[in-house]
Length: 427
Ligand code: GLC
Image (cartoon, rainbow, N blue to C red; front, top):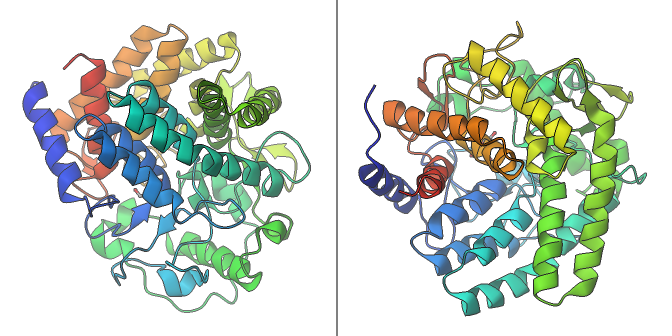
């Protein structure tokens, strides 16, 4: 295998970020994803901050400029029309000044903004930009607990697999069976024209993705009605952990900026989430599991979604147990962290979210493990991530058994995470 050259790897990452930069937002990759994606942008800003802090703040500002009046922040902003992506603005029909999708994505903004603020070289700029973003992120968090946790359980549900950010995970299969496919309007997929169809979701899955979009559209995208009307309501521990971490980080940031009400509200949300997430722990899996809110049953699927809670302040014994689970997975895969337990027969090394490694997941998991002192596992994850880049370039994701690059190429958030990892290693 080639050895890592930090300087040229950094330059290469920068090149990828710059070529996908559209001025005030960055697309994930040319062709496959030609618009602004929510959590891609927040994590991308971390990479950008190493060479241009103002540009990093703008990445997040642009996303929040398209927040809905109810507080929701959409998963895609269709800034400039492109027919290379399906489903495009006409299918979503959300009736927004700039078209957006109608669903959300993992709320990493609170975490990203605190990190940008904490390490800012330009403190005056950081204070000004963070202060402006604070109420907007708070409104997004409030929206989550009002409309995605309507019965005050302390955990929010996703109503569409795409909200999880782990679009095609095995976690959704069982619950997805309950989503009908009748009445889906005829469509032509675009993803399979940009990426290998064998790595992408199947047609039956795509029909269900679209059924949900049409169903929510028929309800006029009224978020106060969508939760109860959705046949798909899944509580994802990874998604909730991101929200819990974001609430805790936003509370710290609000405190630093003297916004005491925002601090108290977010502190309370994080505390309620941490208490409730314990109900998703599985001793036999050594990790958290998803829960189907429509049946109230845990979903027997060991994915990275149940590993990700180390990113939040879960009880230390749980986090250590998760580190041991990652070590078990590492014995079965050459590169970590796979998105599904490689020992499970349902694991698929190349198919989107059913096995492959994503660097953004690695970043958040390594961050959480470092905080609790599992530095050896964290370092293993970072090394694995950089080995993948050295071997296979800046891909969307990687086969954990071979390191083969999969999905889109020259991928923005992969490049951003590489800059973060190089920095952690003291480039
Ligand atoms: C895929 C991923 C999602 C990501 C998007 C853009 O849909 O599943 O998490 O935000 O691509 O990179």
